[in-house]
Length: 339
Image (cartoon, rainbow, N blue to C red; front, side, top):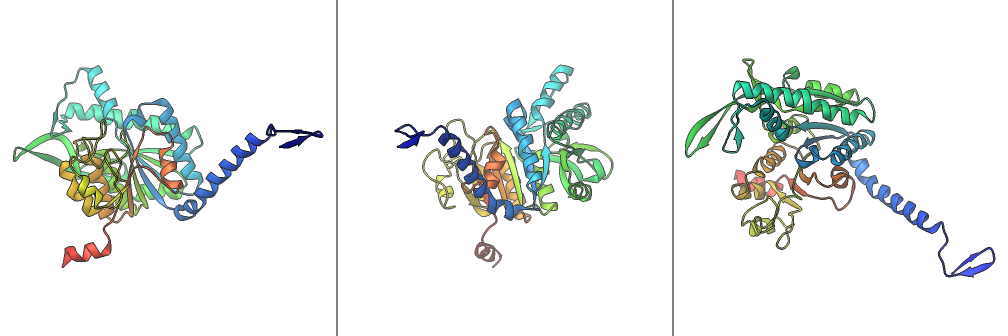
């Protein structure tokens, strides 16, 4: 009961809801405190893609997350692709396009469009979103300062190598310009276009680019945004998800997968490597990027649901975390492999 102006009533005081809401906010801040301490000054590479790039509310939330990381003392680096935007521009221009083994066959004419869209349109849009909150983001492509050096990539189809045009594989990363921007308090926003030693320009997979940059930057985390909750234990049994077909047993051995339809919360590099052949086509490059990152020295790599507003903050600054986390193998497993 509450006494108000000399009267006793069972009604809660008017200020109580506000007080409860304020205490909940304080509890959230306190929960974030150890993570703020742990990751202060750390570099986090974020692959921005999927539905989060197309939905305006999610785009705005993503920009807020990046700026929050910057103000919290982290050093975010954004890497992006832009498949839907490229497709739309190719359609407008009437340029035909095709795919082989899940990769776009990129003619010189197509490459001109890819370069224009990724670096001249998508990159500028992401930079503009972040810079609504202050003069932080600086756009660049993998061509700038020879950040990404690539060579022509071929794919195997029915056991035979097939040329898919101006599609590259990353051979080297020169992160000096990115370090300089971070040291100046900026947020580098990088499009996944690379240049070869001979001057040819290549389209490179943005997941792979993000992983290579994370390794070269000695990042504390790689975060890959996608359109699913994470890696599922029993896909395709989980409707509408992308994960590992028939891998429930393998996932269970990682110690973090539950029953049908559940997302694998964490797994080791060796467990993920064994699961790769059974993954869906869309999930393979994302999980390969995570594997590449942790095998290259990045302590943690995450696949998050970009459809969830503020997914990045939920992963980094809460105790529970979300999505799927890939960890390096324990030292005991590494010793066994090398014996």
